[in-house]
Image (cartoon, rainbow, N blue to C red; front, side, top):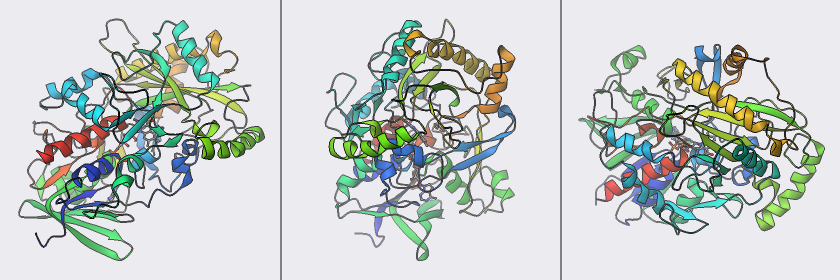
Length: 528
Ligand SMILES: Cc1cc2nc3c(=O)[nH]c(=O)nc-3n(C[C@H](O)[C@H](O)[C@H](O)COP(=O)(O)OP(=O)(O)OC[C@H]3O[C@@H](n4cnc5c(N)ncnc54)[C@H](O)[C@@H]3O)c2cc1C
């Protein structure tokens, strides 16, 4: 056995890192070390689904990044929550289980990534899944990741689906099945009413493996490179700085913002960016940090008189208190809500080959990522552009690894995204104004008046991410690609990136399940 203590060192115990740690350590001869900057996932706010109201708006188990001022958003800075704990963003996300459109993966393959077409990746989605409705051609059972129907969806969520169907959308009971179009209740990554994060699903069950070491509270600061090969990583932790060596491979799974930041800090990236921060260039790779894509979103917000919703009221506080015992004893009730309980995929124009807008119906009044709270009850409808043309970038603010990366999503840089978002809002308003929703949905807040100019003004004043940044370490074969189709960093031996950052294009849907799939694929390629 080699003197080096680990074969593989994985940086980041988020969605991808937890899947990789499980799969790679399944071979008892493979010594794996998983390194996470954040703490263990002990906070009850992680495991009680409604706890996202506490984790998404603030720092703690969340990096709570701010973006550069966005010209497309009237010069505002956007907000980018990201998980900072075991499970990463899967410990603070809204738990919606969604794979995107099958054509998204065919697009990846067509862009020069063999092995990533829908027919190739479907078995991997099925492998990790434990679908509570049972297995079928699209779904797996017996996998680690529990996918369930919501335990106690609100009446308002069912009314949203009914209203969408009356507005002409098809009812869809399975967005991950034969067709994505239409409206329905979302399925969630929950097990008996508790969050089934990547840590709960993939990491906890294998923590006792002697060949798996998990280190929390260790912030990776650099990849150590010797003779064109990744030898290990440097970390800052409770005992100061340390080095962790890898005999075989260093895998960066630090996410769409963390992985390109680490490559840049290690001297791998565009020449000018490295020079600007005085970092020694180890390998020029112009695409590192480029190609950032994210779902731009506008939340329409409505007042409501429906006191069965979650509101900032004494009644809700009392129900939540009682709901805690129901959640603890039976895994049902008000605290099992993921808030974004229902949704829809729609096409804003005739002639489109697939949906271009996703709606998330939320059983609460969402203003500024729940960072601004309003007394009373409300509902919201998020409208997101599924395949934005705009691209942004991730870079460094300085060479200090503890400083947050520079994040510029470039939102609405391309005018077609604004047009799609505006068209989606028109459809969403039609649904929200439908008769089935009347008992749950009152006056709209934040409107700027009638007409297109008013709508554009509202978008510029209020739109922001719906939390799906990808693409900053894009896979491909061209000069700007960062990793190849095996997810190995081009030009450096023994270094890979495995997380949402490798997606060549943004999928038309939420990004957690696709990231699980990416890690499944990476593990399979390494076992071969
Ligand atoms: C608020 C929110 C809601 C969302 N809702 C949904 C949803 O409902 N459904 C869905 O499908 N997707 C959702 N997503 C998106 C989804 O969760 C992410 O796409 C997915 O988790 C990304 O996985 P990842 O492995 O790329 O990164 P992450 O899961 O973010 O993991 C990266 C990990 O690396 C660690 N790390 C970073 N830098 C370092 C460093 N230098 N050293 C050590 N560790 C480091 C981080 O702390 C983190 O644990 C949501 C995301 C957020 C933030």
